[in-house]
Image (cartoon, rainbow, N blue to C red):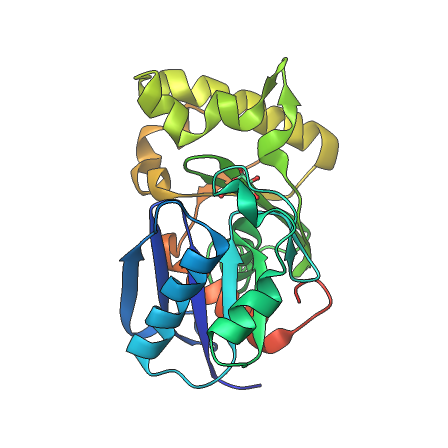
Length: 252
Ligand code: BGC
């Protein structure tokens, strides 16, 4: 397998990219970050991605995440990005914006899940690993012995009459000014609902708020072990880079 790849992680506030050592998941050189254009339309994001690849001087295939369901390269949802993504053939769009090279597009949490499972907090666990990212929304990835089940959207399951991400995203903690302890009650409800349906062996929690994990993981009351993500803000980039070279049917 090629030993280096390039990943771009498209988020609500920043578009981040970098060259990744595919044997360790670590970045080689600097992470390039450009503020997400507003509105975050497909053309504007494609221009930003092209700028990042140009700046890095990268010539090979590229993996790109979107905060959306992605099937066969087409974005199918847009909970926290511009609605005009829905139905956009992101593979074709990025492919031509980046100079007709091989491009793999996948969901942002799926990318983080692949990276955490291969190199990070899930690397020593066999069985079912579920990664949840807490940010503007809640993203999810499910892996079984290292194989991803793509496009799970647990941020949108109903938990006690309310969408999970409207209950427990970290943006809700900010908006309602909840303490970590108060917020952890909501997170526990979401984790309990998921574990009662899927019985995972491990939960990995990511997103910026996982940096402060010692303030809230100890308050969680669900059954399954919960560990913080290890790769933090590089997981999406690393997972995207991996997807660009593995090219399994799950990401295209
Ligand atoms: C989207 C997911 C995404 C998550 C994190 C959710 O609102 O539906 O596709 O993975 O936010 O960005």
